Image 1 (cartoon, rainbow, N blue to C red):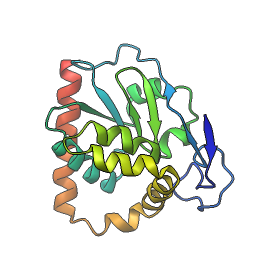
Image 2: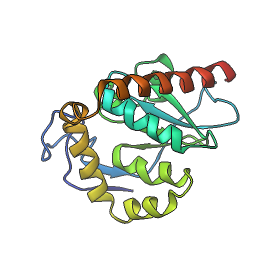
Image 3: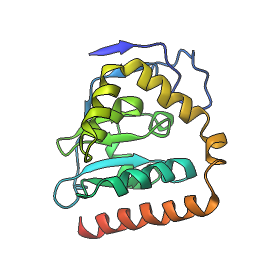
Length: 178
């Protein structure tokens, strides 16, 4: 099922009323083949932009919240991400973050928030709120994505550096066990 919400385009730089079909729709999950990149025991994969300080800072917070270690970060710039997102054009791969379940379901951008939050302790209530208002969730996600450079300036450099190291350690640990 695909529902158009009139959101923004596939690039964080595009306006909120762009006609690019990728990000202007909320899609049901896409099944993705998991070719030999499954990490110990089967994990949910979070594909993120390793060049975005704000993205890594937010992801580090999610990984700290993930006390059970269910999430495995993989940078969108890594070859594994290319294989997992092979059905998407390069611009669409980099347009947002992606969440891939152990069963191979891919959720992208704002649509990835509810399934991600359901995995985290105490995350069911916020997940239900985001799921109840998918259009608003997508628009909020796009607003943050479009303003990530400005928002990143609000996060101290030391915090971003610490977050980057934390995400990198978690990513390395997963690949060593995978």
